[in-house]
Image 1 (cartoon, one colour):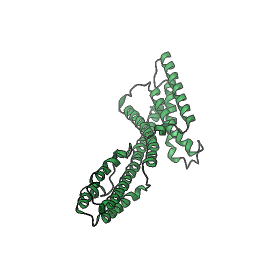
Image 2 (cartoon, rainbow, N blue to C red; image 1 turned 135 degrees about the vertical axis):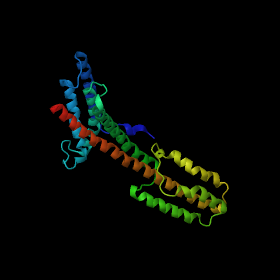
Image 3 (cartoon, helix red, strand yellow; image 1 turned 30 degrees about the vertical axis):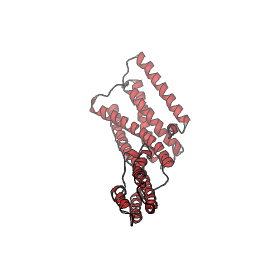
Image 4 (tube, rainbow, N blue to C red; image 1 turned 45 degrees about the horizontal axis):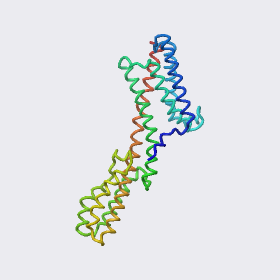
Length: 272
């Protein structure tokens, strides 16, 4: 599969973010060479403030519809800022602390949540680009996440009907190899890179047994192979859609905690 999914959708945003990042690092290098760097000095506070502002605006992303698109106008611009702004905010945090490790438990929590929120967000961007490409290029069926268990049960009932009246050899093959694989949805992380390997593994037994099955059962065997293939695709659909559903809370709740700690940090700087 082509890796073109990694190409930025909006090149202008990518170039702009990289440019801001390069200028920020160059500015930090020059200022740190000129005088000792400290988070509490003017430039350290400047980058800390920039990071805080970007984090707050990023935190408004779920409310973009209620804000009627303000201040970015369209959902696509909101998304681009959410991605590139978050990455720049992490850089601003690193510059704020002078690319040094934090001090104290609170500092580690703040730094850890910052790192987790940004990295998990970038992972989510990758998943939201990669998974649709897998679904479109390697799967022939579409299914709603909530309906997949029901569809899987229906396939098992269909397979039972097809296997009824088969020869002893095919019956043993069905009972021992096929039917267990049709029992409920079988999610697996192995579907994330693609399903070609799993498809080959699941269908290999059919090729092995085909040479021993009578002519009368060849059609049955082909029907069962088609059912197993469809079940494999349902398992893949379920696994890939579940990955996106599991990712969201792993990104959202730490990001919310980060905003809370950020508020405490700002209040401490201002009033303590």
